Length: 358
Image (cartoon, rainbow, N blue to C red; front, side, top):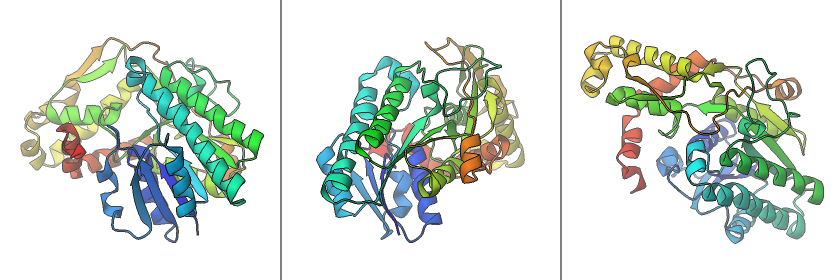
């Protein structure tokens, strides 16, 4: 039986991971630490609040004494670190928060883990798993090979630079102090609980509300899309079988240009409205309610500064060493995502009107 401390698990990927882990590992215990900043939503975990295997603590990853207390009190042997400021646009207009959370916060966690696991209790069976991003590698040309674990770091945004810094700190604590660590660098995630500022949920909700679908530049930026449960599956494999001190790239083998992602999303929503007449009454502002195409809302806007052209993950290492395989292709995963949002309107309406903060 493992005892996990999961940071940032009221957010998108972290909350999906906690649900996945408790479903797949029913004998384990999970403690969640989350500061509940704008993207943290306790409603993502509401079904677990009465589960005896689950505990929620509101607090910051920069609070080292709190982290040490949780590690000791709950006899935590596995720390899974999701907590991060992660929106590139926000990092451009306000980079300070990214430095504080992503660099200082990660260092606070590492110091706490070292103190409790190495200096005080000698917990030999421990693991610090750090969740990072493919953006630390920079950008790719159309014919470049995909990012591998040996690709040199070349971050192009304050967000990517802060995550690169945190990756190096994790590596340093392993090589300097002997802390048992693993790191995963993932491609773009999508799925349930995705905060509505990101491309897929933003465009989906804008279709339902009849608002423009903003596409940066020409929309030809390419991303490798990873369904969030496939990401959780990859992290589980790394925690259970990964080599300490190693980095594993987790990808979905789904490279899509942004404009094609939005067009596919539009086609799926068009199909849903055509098949279910009740959607027109639920979402009367959508062009789909008038039998018009969702694509009519696509609007091209000025590209953002330093916008990376292409990300792509080479996941051969985790596939070869740990037997990882993504189960969702992009079309199946996007269909699942649309259906989840249509079935969970109260969840995203609470975010849009701000009541999720109450």
